[in-house]
Image (cartoon, rainbow, N blue to C red):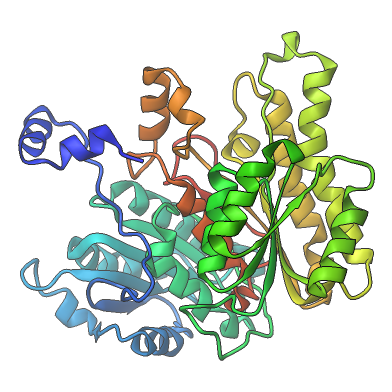
Length: 451
């Protein structure tokens, strides 16, 4: 899907005109391709505080074949090779005075960041601090990272990983995701890790090999993209959608070598039928993606009960019913299972004319947070992905002005693609994401709306 303004701004004449007029120039983002290197240039690791994760970060980069420069070399001016990533290990900060080290390292290093470069800060969670000064310093890092994300250009992103003591083994998978092209449209985000049993033998080219993955709403749009990425990563995909979308659903399933399963997820027996299919045909399920969703937009004062109830039924109640049934059905949800629910930026920030939709998507976030402990007890995880403005066939029908504003009001100055949502979901489905549980990851280019 072409972005006319981005393409124009990056053309010869467009670059000249946008520069003269002071207009933004959205970058062509570095997205994941199988076999591509983790980064397009070397990385540098800096410290603030005790920095207990430095060896782990160095090992992740070296295992991926990424050269690691010393901070002295990386700080040596703006000449020479551009950096692919700047990593700051800020674990162990004790007070605001420690933040000076963060500034002293980041300021010159970020200046040398290349196109689609990555800034990744790792820190202790503020909630685990021992004093007000420690809480303040750890919380300050969130403001630092979100601000860096808004300052970066050329497709660069900045994100923050909170790593409590004891969760060190959970670090490598999330680090690889946030450095890779998989996270092209994930910017200015904060994710907290937990201690988990993380397999050490994941095939990063086909991390879902041998897994069975259910994707609802898979006949088109974001759902179809999720199915394709899951299949690319090795999963056998059970593509689910309503009977009315049967032909499109069959086309997607045939394309990826998956299974089409026609199902109205709001039907009283929907969970029972899905579980029976998974048990009889596949012997269980490893990944469930609750993607199916609808909109029935109206201002609240003009919204009838049918609009409200239909959105709640599809977007929220069906997810609750199916997940609950999977938890109760013996032997269907396999060990190490992953459930990923699709929320929305509207569920975080709200949106005019979408009280029903926003309420349902906020409810999805609540569902994920509430069930996270129960999933952790099983060695499984449940998370949510909240897309921002994603360019689809549906957004293409919007008025030109509305579409342009929606796609530009984020730090990356462009709309995301369905594959950006799919890549984040596929990452959360990986065995190496075992330490990510009960989290909400926004795929929004750091939208200026919401948290």
